[in-house]
Amino acid sequence: FAAHPAPQHPQELIAHNCMKMRQTRSGGLYAWEFEKDGQELRVRVDGQLTFNASYAMVDAALNGYGIAFLPEDLVKRHIASGKLVQVLDDWCLKFPGYYIYYPSRRQNLPAFKVIVDALRQGEV
Image 1 (cartoon, rainbow, N blue to C red):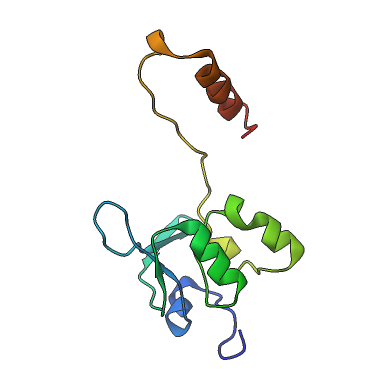
Image 2: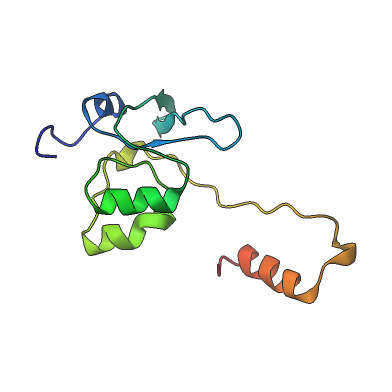
């Protein structure tokens, strides 16, 4: 944050080089979503890089190419090690967890049942 101080409000992201994510189905650019004290906010950021894969965006963030909007589980070890810094954490949406959709249970293989059970218990 040499050129601009770390943002304190999502609207301040406009002054920063932010990494954009392309939506898979529509091809449009994802608007970053924030929430604080019941106030929801969507910000369309600008920057030099656009990605269609989160892991590539993590690598770019680690190499200092800008601010990234990523799921915490992808970057928590980098935050813990000090390689990345979390900003606007008081504006982060609460993540309810992942969902898995699958056909009825009549033809599920035992290995599939193990995976579903592990996901339910938060082991994956």
